[in-house]
Image (tube, rainbow, N blue to C red; front, side):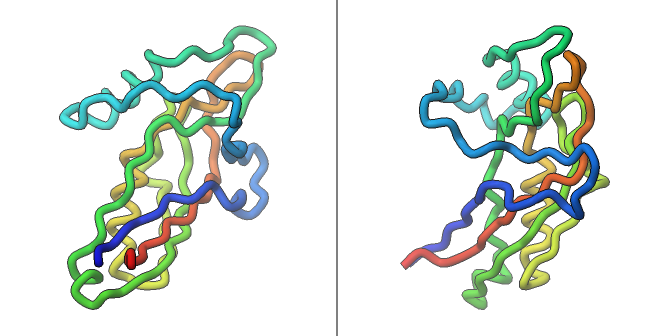
Length: 153
């Protein structure tokens, strides 16, 4: 037996905020993402490396939602593992115009307090291709994801 964490697709926009963006469902015809950058790099450098390896349409008139580029599963907290606890966290966060997560915006609502820090740390390391409005990158508030901490059987 072991444990796993599952990062699920965004579930909704928080409170219907104006300008709220969530990633669309994966496109089965889309090309694979480039390989993960080396884990020794900082989150900002890993995000920059991922963005540099991808091609996005740009220029005046281009508008698109933020696109997840790099997501790491949270570490399963030792305290929760010792208790064989399971739970779900709903994490809300904002994506800055440079694609990084605004660390001050992260809010995790978890079934168990043991998962809050793990969920918050993981999401802080994620990065996105930023939302683009009329060719310019802009911040996109109110992203919501669900992280499920459970045991593999």
